[in-house]
Length: 569
Image 1 (cartoon, rainbow, N blue to C red):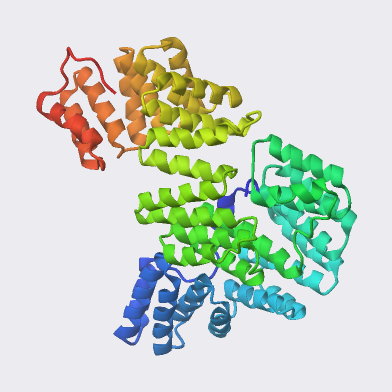
Image 2 (cartoon, rainbow, N blue to C red):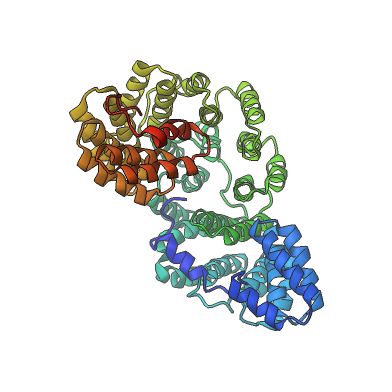
């Protein structure tokens, strides 16, 4: 999600570090080695850590349980077994182990959250409230527990108490995030007018987030305000954004049919909160917590395809392709996200290293769903990664030909097709696409950089091109590739001293990129710094994985640069 929190997400990560979940640091491992009574338990524990780091949670759980059974009073072993069960989605075993963890450490926040969530799932709302109230609200788990407690109060029919809890949570800087969940809570509780007003506020804060747009449209449609719902649909579409959870609402709204609740129960409402937070945390680098929260969300609402697909994506990102495939394959064919699941299955072939199979599957999907923009976009990207430039351009063209008219967010399709054309040697077509991308999204740094660099490389529009690249650097000063473009442009224009300064900065940003090291070597040689040039060329060769730069740089180690030869890219 975008802009879920008034506080930056890194603040959440700092808060997350205070959660009493086990850590796999060398210090923690040393403590285990010093205190464990037997070597077999230690071996299982260390093997479990390796499995958990790879998100092989089933194997990790088995290993940690083996260690815990050998030393039942060891809090670290039991806590890790509990965490592994949670990450594996085995909530029943996680809850059982959580109770044992609390026997060893009554303050374990994550254990309280899991047990409270299980009570919520079982509609034991008073028990959920009691369990979750034991977690301090100042911590991340306390914030999540507070929102879950609010849902428990809704289950008890006490909307006022739910809002009192949310008031306290919002004081921690989460008011923008909370307003969305207030809207869902009011909707589930049957307070339609309050739900509409709160959904409007949430939508105005984040109008481009599909789930927020979906909730607002559903709440309006269920209230019979079809014109207002249609206006939200039209505004969302005008931004060039497509998403199945929003697109599926077009027909019922146009036909004046109520589209159904966003969250049909207390459980699905709480699941959406865990989904949003889990996804945000994972994107910010806290993958294990993200997976844990998404497993809890799936437990609460197993029919929510959007949650299960998010979980599968996280597992695939950690290399757990088989488990991710099981999740994607379970998405029913009548789900709005069914095609998305098929695409993720195809992408996993690419991630496994079988790009041909991925492309074949994506092509098959385009034949079955020829109007699906996402499929053609991912097919184009995959073909482009495989350097099949003409085919990639053709895939992007399938999207572009359907744009009527192109909108701001459609800039990317012209940009990536321009790259494919440029690499295929179709410069006139590429240039037209880059210019169209800039017309849709003026001052986008990637487009400014690519077009400006291309012009410099061809000796065209040199002053305008340099200005474009300088503007791109202003917009993205820590993008090493864009900084490299500026340095190389200076070099092409004969401004060697400026080229040295800028390319040295590029290397500081990306110290192991073969292209940038090779460029800096060329500039050093031209500046008379021949020993430093040789050093940079050697680095370029050492870090080059595909051999392209190696082929170019190896002769330079023997002869340097031919002063009479033209500068080549």
